Length: 283
Image (cartoon, rainbow, N blue to C red; front, side, top):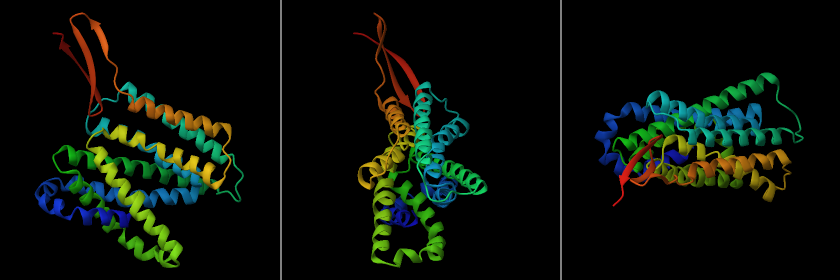
């Protein structure tokens, strides 16, 4: 993630330089986002190491939408809509079923109770920092900073903060060509290209929607594990995938058109995290 962040900063050097005055005026948001970017992978991967891949992933990614909803509610004073709450509930229920299905699989060796609890706590830290850097980037874009400058500044700062981690623990990345290839892929595809698309999306959808849609990530990983790696997924796991699919349908379906009377039509559209209704008089 650090290397991907530095690449973000490199390709955004001109926008960052051109908008440095705007970024300077919003330096608290940039600092908050950069710190959250640096803490997130450390907490996430340590959570998986201590509590196991399934539990660590579920807690880290599954708590992100809840944390983002609370951030918008507390920091932006936005009202959480029934639609978002329904989508988040479906997605989190699906994540829990996936977690239970994975935990039911036979695994050589199990973490101690203390390590599991610490792993769960770090997963909550990861979900919170994920929500924070998403909120900070969305807020910067909403205040007029371009997407490229925002992502370059926030993720570039996070990458710089992660450089000491690379120097201290990065020896395995150059231990073999295979390791180097995997590291290059991780930096270029999910961390660089993925977050370029994520930054573009933040300019078009609310924070709560963006973070809830990322519940698709462990669902795709599970499908790949079944179809490519050959792992077995019990019925509870497939039910979890179905619930996550339902979550995505609820969040991405277009708003309904209602006819309250003969005098006009009522439309609904998304503004931030609130649904605003207005009446258009018929001709």
